[in-house]
Length: 323
Image (cartoon, rainbow, N blue to C red; front, top):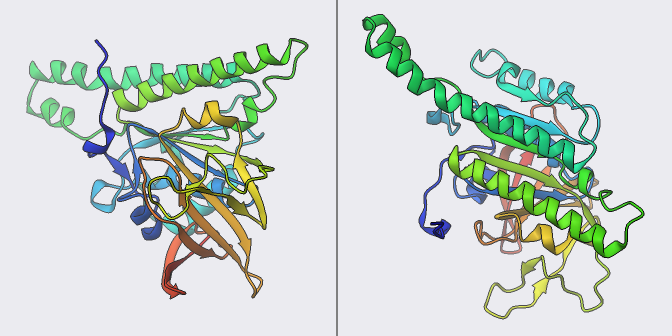
């Protein structure tokens, strides 16, 4: 019989994002066992962060990683392998334990929800094979010599992170057909629910961190609020505060059906500062990450996101890191 899980009482495995600010914001890093969504407009820094996570999950646990491998499914065209290589070279150059060989990249184009589901099903088969190997190796070593036993106890890298960048790309056009709009929306909702049910099961069963990126759309709500935003004031009954990026109010794409599928929603806002630099604010709007807004200033660098110097302005803590 299925039993509810109180996620607030669990201490899941977490993997560092390679930035002290972001790890602190997430209470230790990106959690395994749930679906985390990173949403924001274009050029907000979503892909830069997820590319970095593909490398930091390979770090040893003593450095905040999970000694793991990562799977990267990119739906926006050709995967940005050159950007990933740039982060690797500039940040982890000279470290043999951090390499692109531990990043499994989906090479086939992902254009439809069916394509995406097929790739996730293949990941499920890979996870099943990885889970079966240690048991088989241990059984074989039990009847072998000391050297075989020693080899069987050497830690193996298994997949600990799945990144889908972005989920909105395959679902935003899924309803374009000749069938009535109600049926289109119903079909898309069913596809969303089916995908996330599979992802949640894999995340919980294999202690997998699932990180999905999403896009935003303009928010035309006349009452000044959004049902998917941060609760203004943080108290019970507080009015939801609007999400603002680049001077305009926005909403995460894919609607309410998708909003109820993710466990943790992170919103990245992009703003132009008075000195011409870009300030990116990271906010959490879901129950698993009940943290305040963190405002951070990034500069464009090839080494990825990293903390530089925290500053305090107007009573709010501003932490600076490089992008």
